[in-house]
Picture 1: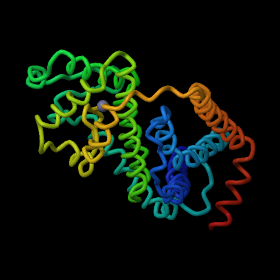
Picture 2: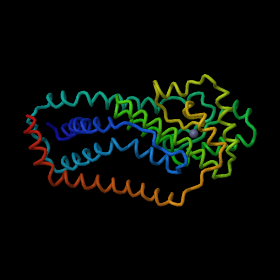
Picture 3: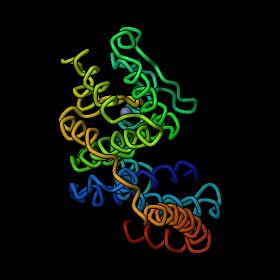
Picture 4: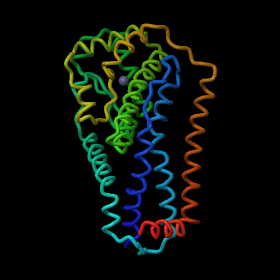
Length: 297
Ligand SMILES: [Zn+2]
C-alpha cells in the first residue's frame, strides 16, 4: 500500500480510538465567574481530549517520514479501511460542518464579528439607530475585543475539535461553557477599555429585544455551526451575564499574569511533546508499527 494512504488510514483509526475515551470525560461547571482566566481554562479544557490524538498523529507522521514507500500492510487495505470506517464518518461529518460554517451567512445578529483571518465587525444599521452613543461604543468595543483575539477563527477551530468528539454530549457542553466564558471575557476586556458595564448590558438587552425569537441559539444547537462572534451569546446565561455587567469589574488577580504564563507554558510543553513524539516515531516507529500490525493480523 502507498505510504501516504496507510498513514491516512492509521491517523483515522488510531486517532479515533484515542479521542473516543477522552471525549467521555464529563464536563463540569467548575469555572469560577470571578476568575479572569476562566475563558483560558475553558479553552484548554475543550482541547484536552484532542491532545492525546495529536501526540499519536505526530508519532505516526514521524514513523511515515522514516518508512519506505510503498509499505507492507499485513492486515490488507480493505480490513484497515473497514476498521477505521466509523472514525472516517466522524471525520467527514466534522469536515463538512467546518466547510458549511465557512460559507454560512451571518444570522440576523445585529452586530457580530466575522472573518477567520481578517476579522471585521458587522453592524446592523437598524440596530445602530436604536442605540445611544454609550451603547454603540460598548457594543463596538465588545466586538473589537472579539476581533483582537481572532475569535471567529477560534470558534471555528473549537467547533471542529468538538465535532471530532461526536456523538458524545460532554464535548458540546465543554464548547458551550467556553462560549459562555468567552462572552464574559470580552465583556471584561471592553470594560477595561473604558466601557460602562451598564451601557454594555443595555446594548445586549436592546439586541435581544430586536430579535426576541431570534434563531441564534437554536442555530448553534442544531445546524449549529458558524464562525460569527456575537454580541449576545447563550441566552440561557443572559441573566447571569447582565448581573455580572452591572456588578463592579472583577479585579485582575495578582497571580493572573503568572497563571497566563503557566498556560503559555502548557502550550509550549505541548509543542515540545509533539516534537518528541515525532522524533520517537522516526526512531522507533517501524518496529512498534510492525509489532502492532503483526499482533492485530
Ligand atoms: Zn460577544
